[in-house]
Length: 112
Length: 121
Image 1: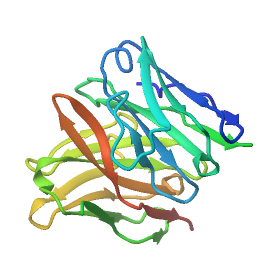
Image 2: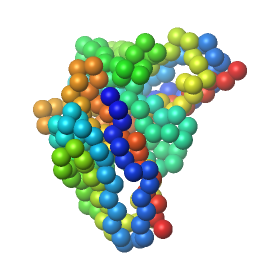
Image 3: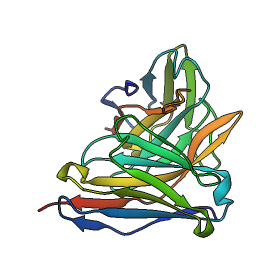
Image 4: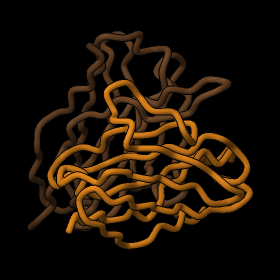
């Protein structure tokens, strides 16, 4: 079971939008609507930002949105702010009885 | 408030054993899976395994099968991750997280702050 593929880094200026992709297969991302996204600041635990492809937990700004097309899920941050600079990881359910979850490789978001 | 409180940082020598803990509070501990996630220094998140404290059903990621043991004591709402013989390559941060699992949702919604494990001679 291979890790989902994310770009190593993306960057944008304050106020701009950035999109992070998360590419898997029909056995994980493409097969289920159970993709979640986590934000991790240096030295901190991951924080849930998006779940079930596009749902946002309470307290997460609506600048964060999620979507999916085929085997690729995406996280978009609109109106980029300095505090959005962090690492972001996707995660998908994979349905395997052996082990049913897989993380993405992680993306560093830099606010220029 | 739903919380997962992890045990403190550990410094061990190669070959030693170790058991770290993750105590849940503010919710029904036996009704949610607990996942363990490894993060090696400067690296990404890796699933290690999951356990359902209600019946101790446990699944391991293939990379960690046979390398660690995941267990839980539901009487004290605590999950554990243990090693019988540590290696230097086990040096990492280890997170536990609550896995919300239903017919319409699969998500790690609450995370512990992590336990740092350092293995060095």
